[in-house]
Amino acid sequence: MSNYNYAKETYAKYGIDTEKAIAALMNVPVSVHCWQGDDVVGFDCKAELSGGIQTTGNYPGKATTPEELMADMDKAFSLTPGAKKLNLHACYAILGDETVGRDEIQPKHFAPWVRFAKERGIGIDFNPTFFSHPMVKDGLTLSSPDENVRAYWVRHGQACLKIAEYFATETGIPSVMNIWIPDGYKDIPADRLSPRARFKKSLDEILAIPYDKTKVYVTLESKVFGIGVESYTVGSAEFCLSYSDYKGITPLMDNGHYHPTEVVSDKISSLLLFNEKIALHVTRAVRWDSDHVVIFDDETKEIAKEIVRNNALDRVFIALDYFDASINRVAAWVVGMRNMQKALLNALLLPSEALAQYQAEANYTKVLAVTEEMKTLPFGLVWDEYCHRCGAPVGMDWIREVDAYEADVLSKR
Image 1 (cartoon, rainbow, N blue to C red):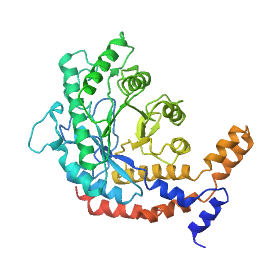
Image 2 (image 1 turned 180 degrees about the horizontal axis):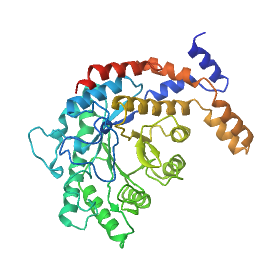
Image 3 (image 1 turned 135 degrees about the vertical axis):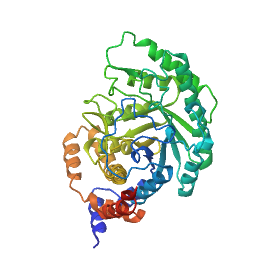
């Protein structure tokens, strides 16, 4: 008996069809963030990283051109099973010899990315870049009291909305356009209301331009605090959820953007009750929103469980968001992508319906006992089979390929 057949029969004893789980996962795209490959630098102005964001480390081999970044992503994609999307920030516009402000970017500045995506049969998600730019004044963008600054960033958001629609039209796959701003204050503000009123006005103006809502899902992402904005963020959880409901757009939760005792996994079911779609940025917060590489930890597994047990694989946009410059950047991508896939497969291999029935019957003994029993089933054998069927390396084979890529490509930059 092969290892996989043994696992298949073992799971079948619990009423779990491993074939069904593998087939389901192959159709779940994970949106992969380009900014892991170059430490969130981008190509449009290469300004110093700002907005409460820090990338630590100086591991050699960072991508510095669009061609290098695309090659690195290709390598990471080849080492990871499952469906994928490309997630871009606006600062990754490819301008050539042009000097273009972020409020003037156009679809043509992203045509090479569209070619990249179409050649690989994947979609593109998009993010306006409201940080690391000279027009960020006193740490404020869409909430700035300076009308010239606020209007500049409104134009940027509007331009990005048109670009997101271009991505969807060209690839045939809907684009998620996520709005996040770093605006806030280091110390206790004298006026909490006015910045949020200006932010609301700015969002209203961005969304006032027409766009195809079947092609573009606009999302709004909150944050609890960051470096330099420890006391107050304009885009708080309450603001962003309220605005998403008010405007009928899609709420996005980044699991690093909440207080340390909050978990996003507990919030998913609530949002699913009131939204057609929701979106996630999956990261790993260590002490704060430090954007560590996603691992196969309890919260990542709980997030995946909530998506699967609520039959929401087609209702949740899953994206990754982290950046680590202290290790091989391609390996960081691969580790995070594979762990997100592992978490989803783990959730698909749980007897969710039976557990829910036990809970409804107040049979908490069985809920606990069966949940614990699942932890020692041969999950790894099913994971290996999934990787094999997707044409991705099994086990640690991918590390050897990363080592070779570092020796042949990264070390020569």
